[in-house]
Structures are given as structure tokens and as C-alpha cells.
Image (cartoon, rainbow over all chains, first blue to last red; front, side, top):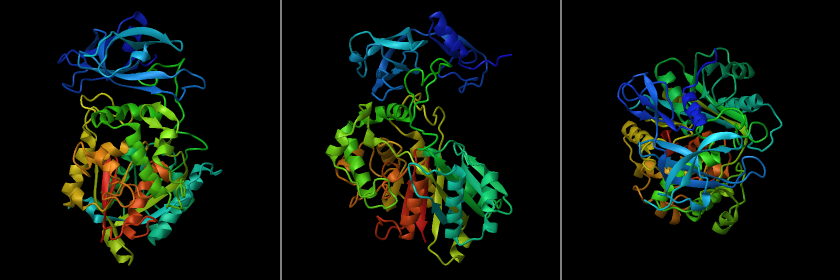
Length: 125
Length: 379
């Protein structure tokens, strides 16, 4: 039997077009990155909870050192979610990168993989 | 007084620091270790403990056999390496204080330039998606730049400010014959002309070296050190701190990314163990895999007040002639990258009075990492 990774639910969600996080069945705390049990209450019961897909850029950087030779630079960012979680993502519209800018998650393909990327939605909060 | 206060560093050893050793990692490890044992004045048969960290790939057995150590009674591995490198001295002290070992050899060696390069991308396209590499954080430079960006923003620090810091590190290195950048100081303009690697945080000169080499230490009971008739470099305090919710590399998930809770906990532990305060530190090394690692730790250890590190850097306080000399070997940026442990050898040299950039009269040294640190004193 193939052992299940704690984060498999997240990527299965991405493949279905859903952005998910673990929510503890014991104390309802949301958590990311995934973990096998709740650090707050100790419960190992949880379910996958859909997230709003909203967020705000906390910090961003542009990597001009190519991942592979001749790759385009990527604009990687930390995104604060209204649910109280933080995720690493990369910007689909790097020209609009700004600290505090509101973003929306878009599940999009990069380099052959479906990933939770973000695009700014205009204005700085 | 802490348990750690009853141990001393009796020996240090290192290989040449190169970019292409042409030798096995174990041969580097054994050379550095043999030199540390010789430096301690002890016999091989006196060494009964071996400690490194989990990222080191040298087998304890192979090292024991290469050195001809008759019996090892204690082994230990601190987590990861780097920012946790000085936790090895806490493991050594724990063994010695509890009577499990008398003299512990700490070692770290790799061909980190010519074989397994840390700086290369670890990219997993086409295989498994994850929360960091898949989103574009594939090199340590990217990973750490993202880690430090919120702190730099909070302090209003720019690449030019980091340039002022690197100029000071390179000034120390320029006077250290062991350093990769020996006799190669730079100006702020040189730093600002070096190419962007991770914009707007890291230019080429903000990076540490990739190094082939080995470094080793012997930690002994305090009475052994005192009986040696040589300068006694006492480990007066040593502390780790791993607050809930942190991780060694992808440290992005705590609410507050500006306050270094880990470092502050380490520092408070050190002051409690030693009875000292930051003002009594004569010389420091701070783990500098990338230049932004220095300012957050400098503040975390209380070498200035929170919010004042930029002023200290611009005033040249960390460089030659400064009030808080930091990385007098040139650090990992200027000397070599032995995963942090070559900054510990520099602290020992400072306490022995043998650094190429000796701070006159230095009697207290802080060997600082983000998640661990130690205080050495010369008796």
C-alpha cells in the first residue's frame, strides 16, 4: 500500500481546483503546512476545509538566479490569508508586486504542474 | 553556573579551505580531527566521544577507525547544522558533565564546492509538489532571502546597507591568511556592482563561500584544560532554542517574522548561565550564510537595542576598529563556509590571543547562531 503523505489532501484539492487547509476536529484550529496532529489540542482528527482564496502580500522577492539555465525569473511571495494562515506562493503578475497588495489565489500550471499561484486584485490595504 | 561551564575547548584543527580539495570527505574530516587532537595535547586514547550534526555525512565508525580511537563511549548529532552548529558544544558538555565521556571530538567536513554543492537548486518539477520548492524557493539564497525580508523591511534596510556590512566582513577577511578573500577587501561600490542573485535582497557578495574542507574541536573537562598548562578556553554557557512553529529552513509560518524569538531565548539563556551581559562581550562571531543573517542575530543577542542595527552597521561598529567586532575571521562570507564551525574556531583563537585580527585583551567571546549560541571565556 502506498503510504499517504500528510500533504496529499492539499494537492488532491489543487487538482480539483480547490484551495484547502487542515482544520482540527478537536478545536477547529486551521493549520498550514500540514501536520499529522494538532499542535494546539493534540487531536489527530481533522478534515480538509476550503479557504476563501483571498490574501495579502507580506513580502516578495524576485529570483534572477534561474532555477534552470535560461529560466524566467520568478516572483516568490509570502501571502497572509484572512483565515490566519500564511502560504508561500508566486505571483502571476509580478509587475504589480507590492507589500500589502491584496491577491487572489489562482490554480494555474507552472512548468507542467498545477500550483496555487496568486494574482493581485488591485489597491493596497 | 551551567553544566556547560565545566567544560573547555582544548583543541582546534582545520584543513586548508579550498574550492577543489581533490580528496575524500573522510580524509578532510580525519585531518582536521587529528590536528584538533594534536592541538589539545591529549592522546588518541583520551578521546571517547564523537559529536557532529545531522547534515554531516561522515560516519562515526569510519572516523574512529581513521583516527585509531580505541574506544568511543558517546556519540551525538545536533539537528541539521548551520544556525544550529554550536549545539554540538552543548551535546559535548552534556556528555562530559554527566560522566559519559571525558574528551569529545566535534567534527564537520565536506566537499561542499567540488561535490555536493549546497548552493545549487534542488528542483522537483515533474516529481513531487511541495509548499516551497514548487513555488520558486529552490536555493538556500532564495529560502533565506524570503526568511529575512520582513526583518529588513521593518528596519528599513536596503542592499546598500547590507553592502556596508559586507565591506566590514571583507576587511577582516583581507587580513586573514586562511580566508578565501585574503588580501581582497571590497568597497561599497564593489558590493553594489556585484550581480543580483535574489532581488532586492542578495547580491553575489552577500553570499557565503562554498568550501571544501574540515574543522574539528576537542572539548574536555575544565580540570583537564587547567592541567594542560595552556590558555584555558572555557565554555561558560551554551544554549539551543527551538520555539514551536519554526523550522530550520522554511521559517515562514510564525505570526511575527521580525522578532527573533529563538535568538532572544538563546541569548537570555546564555546571560543567565554566565552572569554576563551583552556589554561584556569583547568579540563575536555571528552565523552569516547570507549577510542578512547578521543584523537580526546582532539585535537578538542584544549587541544593540532593537531597531538600532542599521545605525551600528553604518557606523562601522562590526568591522575593524568598531565597538562590537563581529566575524574577525571574515566569517562565512569572507573566510570559508564550514557550516558555521569555522566561526567557532575563530572565537577560540580570539580567546587564545592568536587571531590574525586579534582584539587586544579579549577575554569573552560570543559564538552566535540564530538557534544556538555559546559564550567562551579565557581564564
